[in-house]
Amino acid sequence: MVGVFSVVGFLSGDRHRAGLILCKSYLSALSVLICIATTPVPELLSAAKAFRVPVLLLEVTQLIYRYLFVLVGQARSMQVAFSARCGKPGIIALRASSGIVGVLFSRSYEKANMLTRSMLARNFSGTLGTRQLPRFKSRDFLPLLIGLLCLLAAFILF
Image 1 (cartoon, rainbow, N blue to C red):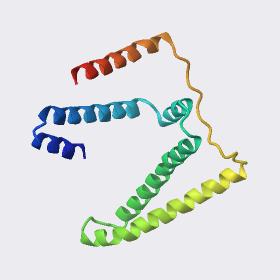
Image 2: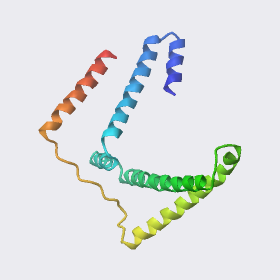
Image 3: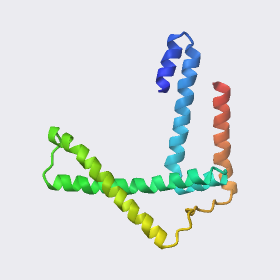
Image 4: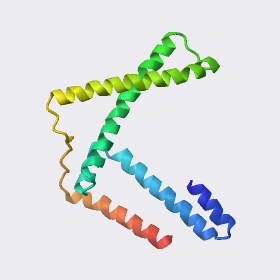
């Protein structure tokens, strides 16, 4: 998507702005990837809670994150069953994929329903727990300083 805007800017003659759009978007995507790769999701959600992100948004994000593991587990078991029945990729498998997707979501929905019932049976309070954020230590100052210097350098250069 950003590439389209960058190309349009380049073709309109504003080459500098096209380059800036492309560089800034890739830098922001890189920073998000580094954050996700280095920080577990529960800690990110705890940090979001500390920044007063709405609780409903945090809980929906946490449930979707947990539900993805249910979907992946069901897809993996269906893939093993497909391979065990000597299933091979091709036109026939492509036609059967719509049924497989339907069964995948049906099984995942049933499993999620069972999880919900078990949570309610254990007196689920309606809010999911989050981790306590660790205190800021002196060793955390250097990465923070480096990050701020990189942001300042990007701001000055671009």
